Length: 186
Image 1 (spheres, helix red, strand yellow):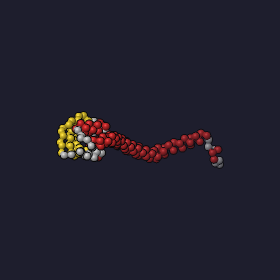
Image 2 (spheres, one colour):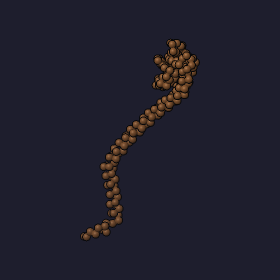
Image 3 (cartoon, rainbow, N blue to C red):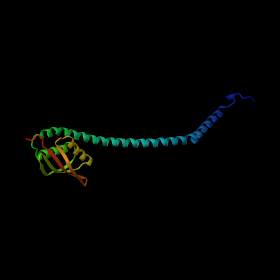
Image 4 (cartoon, rainbow, N blue to C red):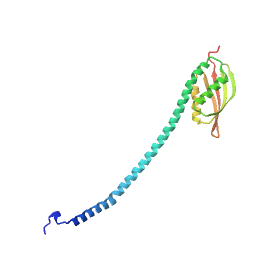
């Protein structure tokens, strides 16, 4: 018997051979390749989840920083506006109302939530006048301290030599001593 290649294999045997080959390839794929692919898929999903959580934490930190920068910009803008008023006050006798109104306006412009603002007293010491205020604030401690620093940084003749901040029921009570030094007095 002579073998003439595919001529002796019938169509039916050829179809059976193809089906057996397909089944063999499927079994090989399921046994050998699928576990490796499943492990790689799980590793990729794990990496994606880690990166996603890192991205969300970075976005949240950026958003909180944006809020801080917005408050800083508002406070700086308000201080610039009142810097001119402070320079005008240098040559005149300043009253408690002038200083109190300036501080209240700075609080309001900077976005700090002031619940009450009271005058505690006044001390005169030569060319220095010390105004004492009691302020109740519903904001973060960082914003309050930043506000106090900006008042000192942008005013040559207005200082805050001491302040006392206490917290009760999420409301800060700030006792401020604001020192105003008279210049060019006649």
